[in-house]
Length: 117
Image 1 (cartoon, rainbow, N blue to C red):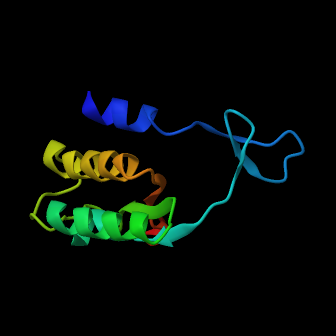
Image 2 (cartoon, helix red, strand yellow; image 1 turned 60 degrees about the horizontal axis):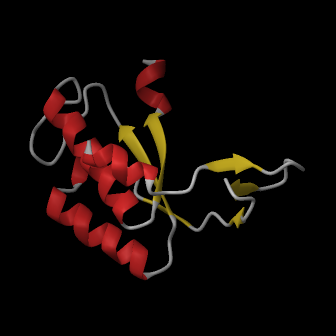
């Protein structure tokens, strides 16, 4: 439930009427100041996630681009595979922690290479 409330604290983003930029639900233009952390769910522990996202916030980033799975199956820093609830619990943690820091997560489900195999 905490994850839901964290996400809801962020303004909803929509495409502007002229279709040239993103804007918040109240019409304010949204500048995508993103940082890439493609392998965050696989390489970082919760403590590492905290440090990274706090640093992103402190440096003015408002979006973090994350790839959820790099391989099939993917394995996180705790040895948990992507087919388990424990793996997705870490992904939930990342999204919630980002939202707590005012950061949107641009999520890429999986890298293309495993799909082509």
